[in-house]
Image (cartoon, rainbow, N blue to C red):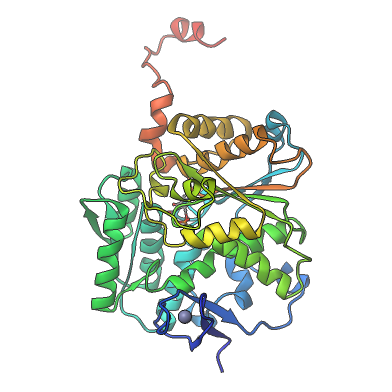
Length: 404
Ligand SMILES: Cc1ncc(COP(=O)(O)O)c(C=O)c1O
Ligand SMILES: [Zn+2]
């Protein structure tokens, strides 16, 4: 007997767990369904400081198949300095910029690659806007599996260098993320490669649920009032909701129905925000995304429709911010909390500011703002709003004059 099965999100048909991700009857996406054991808060208390501490809530049958590079249990920082600036008394930053490959993608990639190992696949890969490339490549290296990355050619150099360093076969596609994604899907199916975010997606999204488990545990098993989530494909936002719901199912949390989900997207690639503001259920793809937040440049979000459903279910909002606002927000976070994030994190912080300005968040709300990637991955964009230091002679008089 296995602990998990797969269930169609649309028609609810159930399948045995296998290398399969769409419903045969209606082509809906398959989600992992669990037979949960009895769990208590004490179950996790003394376990390892990685997201594998929540093993019973993850879709791996046998612990020997876990591929871990030590990701998860990232800090939940009480952001008192930033909170003060914004007039918020209970602001927390979930800082996933300090994961092993410096983004939250270590969560979904690690779970998907562990499952690929469990299913006996001989190669893995991903379509990526940059961060998933390194998360997949690093876990593949640890698992000893070949890794094929498909990414648009215009992403940041640091992300390319990082993924190449882990030994990935890196294919820079002349086109958008959606073009790279389409190619990856075809190659995955024709060659039997486990593409973590496509044909392994059912398991992949389970890794992002650990964002909810950790936040709940770090808040001493309380439900936040407001969650601000940067959105590309929408997989993470949807997974965070699933994670909180499962904690309610296993009685580790009380009612989660009063939390508010806020989707944050960059201007230039904000199809979900557009649909939300038009009160439409249909997400119209952005053909040529144009934003400094390259990791969120997904014009045709796979889970867009489900994000809209989640926003309706959880009294949420969707908001966007432009390049200047994103870069300003990166500096604001760095200079108040000492956290250096890439543009995706700037999108979260900027949208948080907008929610406060629009009166959608109260001063005493318990707010969790997800910061999902590291600033060192996007220095060429961030330097545009900073002044490069002029080189000075090693002369004590001259230098002393500029230290006041
Ligand atoms: C740093 C960062 N934050 C957020 C996201 C958005 O995640 P999702 O595509 O699951 O919505 C991505 C996606 O690549 C990312 O790299
Ligand atoms: Zn179905």
